[in-house]
Image 1: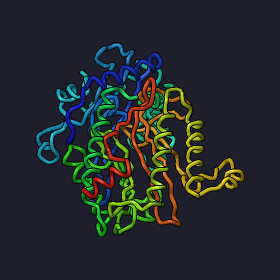
Image 2: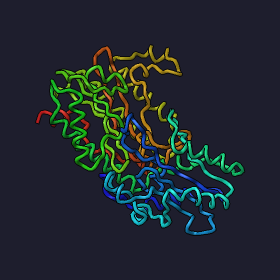
Image 3: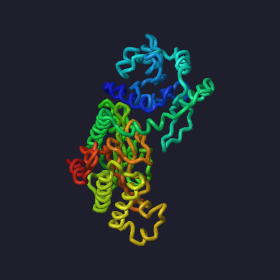
Image 4: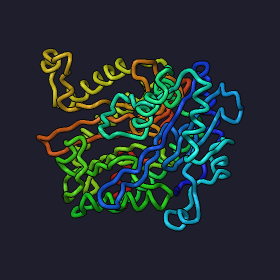
Length: 430
C-alpha cells in the first residue's frame, strides 16, 4: 500500500459499534474480495472488499474476519484468518501480513492462518445459533460476478442448515454512512490530492491537448501523493462529450472555444474523493458559457445549504429541482408554459439536468446510506448539479464533497479547490 498507516482505533471502534447491534449467540463473517483474472496469467489489481476493510483495516486478499461476541473463549470473540506468508511469497509477491503486523493494523489479537479456518469456524458455529451473512444490498448494485462472499454463503448454508441467518448489510449501511473523524481526515486527504491534480492541469490545458493527456496529468499527480490512482473511472469530456453523463473514452482533442468537463477524484487509503469542475480550454469563458456556469454554481451553493440533519432525501431533490427550474427559466432554456405543462414524474428541468444532485461518499464513491431515513451529522455527500445543452455544444457540472454538521451549513472538504469562474480564468492565464 502507498498510503500511511491508519489509526487502528478506527477499526476497533467500528467493530465495537457493529457487535453492539448483533443478536445473542450470533456470528458475523466478512470475506475479502477475489483477485479477478483477465486471461492467461493476468489479473486485475486487487481491490479490498470495503466491509472487511472498514472493520479490520486488513487490505489483503484471502482474508476472513469473524466476530463472535458471545464466544466462550474470549480469544475467539474477534478472529482474523490470513493467508500464511513465507519467504517464497515475499520474494515473488512481496511481504504479506504476519500475525504480529495484523495486530498492529487491526487491533485484533487472535490471528490464524487461513488453512485453519474450517476447523476453528466449525468449533465456533457449534456454540452459535445465528450467522450474519454479508450480502450486497447497495441501491446501485448490479453485480453479476460470483464473489467470495457468495461462495461462502452457499457453502455455509449447506454445512450448517439448522442455523438461523441474518443480514449484516443493514447494520453496515447505518454505521458506514456516518463518518468517524479519522475517516473524514482520510477523505479530506483524498480531496487535497485531487486539488493538487486540478491545479496541475490548470497550467496544462490549452487548445490542442487531448483528453487522455489531461487524464495522464491527474494520475501522475495522484500517485506521487500516495494515492493508488482514481477513485472511479475519470470523465475528461471536452465540448459535446460533456453531454454524455458517463463519458469515459477520454480520446478526443480539446479545441479552442470548448469547455472541458472534469469529473475526477483521487482515492487515499481506499477512501474516495469526487470532484467535478468545468473549465474553458483556451482559458476564457464566453459570455454564454459564463452565464450558464454561474447558474450551475448558484444551484450548487444553494443546494449545499439544504444538507442538514433531518433532511429528507426525496424532499431535498424536489427543492433542488425548483432551484434549477428557476435558473433554466432565467437562461431562456425553459419558459413558464414548459413548467405548467410538465409531467410530474419527469419535471421540465430534467431536459437539461437529468441526474441526482447528491450521493453518499466514503470508502465507496457511491457509499452506503439508507435513502429513506433522515440525513444525520457526519454524513459525507457530493453536491453536483449540472446543465447540459447539446444544441449549444457544451455541458457544465460542478461538484464538491461536503460533511453534514450538527448545526449550520455543511463543511466543504473541497473549499480550497478553485471553482469561481474568474479565479479559474486567472489561474489558467497566469
